[in-house]
Length: 117
Image (cartoon, rainbow, N blue to C red):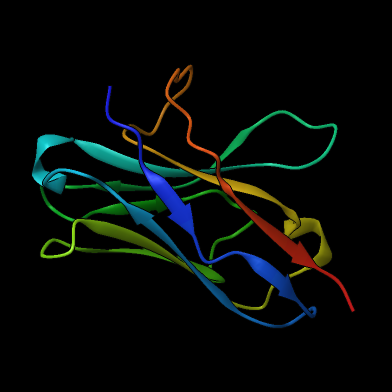
């Protein structure tokens, strides 16, 4: 199974922004959906955003609506998650997956996002 590589995390102050990247080894068109998930310490992994590769439609969890934007670059085979107005509760390891539902058995290493002053 193909594994993706997430990057772009870091430490940011509340209200700040980060852009996460998900590098997919093959064409995005091979996969019907690409999803971003996150897992905070002591909590279960949860869905954040989903992109349908057929038509580019997107969806977001309520807790990130209006703040996060998922997008894609079909030339670079990369999916992005632009995160604005970050809050301390957004602190988590963020993962990308080649589908938008769980269970999923091919998680990458993820990228750590820490929102703190």
